[in-house]
Image (cartoon, rainbow, N blue to C red):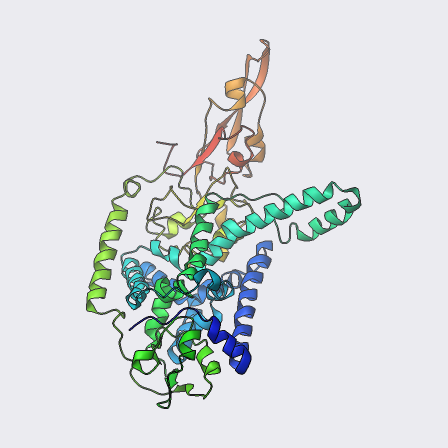
Length: 530
C-alpha cells in the first residue's frame, strides 16, 4: 500500500475548528504525562539512597522484553519479574496500549514530534516495519544462546541510561556553573547557598560525578528523537524491539479498531494516525499489531464510524509481519553474531580493567558478556560514587553497556549494597552488607615508578589511610632513603597485601598522582595490564 501522508497540520486544524479534542485523547495524554512524570520523579528521588530495590527497578520489571530475554538467557524466573505479565495481559486484551499510553520514551517522542522539520515527507516503505520484528527475534534467539547484548536497544534501558550518563550530569554542571556565577554577586550569595543546600546531597551529588563517553549515549537517544524528522514515531514504527514483541501479542487482542462500512474515505483518520497504520486501500483498516491505541482516529471521525470494541476474530498477517523466512534469518543472524562476539580476543583473555560490581562475576556464567545483565543502567544510576560506568571497550562488543567499575571516577563504597538491591534481574546479586564486604571484585597493584614515596622519595600514605578494611590491605614498610634535598629521611613505603585486598578502588580514587593513579585496581584474575 502507499504510505499515508505525514503532514498532519491540516487535519489538526480541522480538529481544532470543528472537532474539539475529545475526552479519550485528554485521558490518554493525562496518563502519558503522569507516567512520564512518575518515571522521572522515581529516577530523581531514588538517587538519594535508602529506597527499596523493588521500587527503584519497578519500570524495568514491567518491561516484558527485558524479563523474557533474561529468562531465556539465565534459565531463571524471578518472582519480581511477574510484573511484566501485567503488561503482556494488558496487551493481550487492549493491544499496544503500552506504546500509546504508558511508555515514557513514546511519550517523549510525542512531546518532540518535529513536525515542521518533517514537512511534506512521506513515510518510508511499509516493509521497514519488519525491522523491529526481526530485531526482537534476534534478541530472543541470542538470549537462548546466553547473549543479551542487543538489549542495549530496549526503550526503557535507553531512557534510564541516557538520564544517568548524560542528562543528569549535564544538568548538574549547568546548575553548578550558574550557582558559581550568581554566588559572586554579594546580594545573591545567601539565597544561592540556601538553594544549593536544598539540592545537595538529596537530589544532586555533593561532588561532581563524571561518566565516560557521555556523547555516545546521548547521541543514541538524540538519534531516536531525530528520526521523527522522517516519520512520526519512527522509532516505534520501525525499530523498537519491545514494540515488536507487543505488536505480535496484539494480533490476538479482542479490543481493536474497527471501521464501519459507511466510511466515505475522508482521510482524516489517516492524517492523525501517529504510526501510519490506517490503510485506505483496505477500507481504512488498521493493523492491530501497529496500532498504539492512541484513539486519535476515534475523536476526529466526524460521523463516529471508528470504534474500539471487543470481538474475537483472527487478525490478518501483513506482509511485513515475520514469517518462516524471517524466523530462520533471525536464528542465523543470532548464531553468527554470537559466534563472532565469542571469537573476540576478550572471550579468551578478559581485559585486566574489567572490574565487575560485587557478586556479578560469580552470578553470571560469563564475566565478560555478563550473561544475566539486561543493560538497563539501574546499577549505574543508583551508585552513590559514580564508579559504575557502562562498559565500552573493557568487555568488547558482547559486554557493551554492561556495568564496570572505573575506580579513578568512583570507588565501590565499603558501606553500600545499592547496586545489588537495584538490579531487577540479579545480574548483580542482592547481597547483605556483610556478604558484600567479603566479595573480591579486584586486586590493587602499586606502580612504583609513579608512586610518590617510591619514585620521588617524598612522604605519602593516602592509599593506606583510605583503605576501609579493618586489617588494611595496604601495608607500610619503613626505610631510610635519600630525599629530594640529598639528606637521609625515613619514609613509609606502601605495599599491597593481595590476599586481603577486595578491589574496592578507593585507594585509586584518592591517589594524589595526577591523571593515572600510582595504585590501580585490576580484575581478580589479573596481576596488572597485559
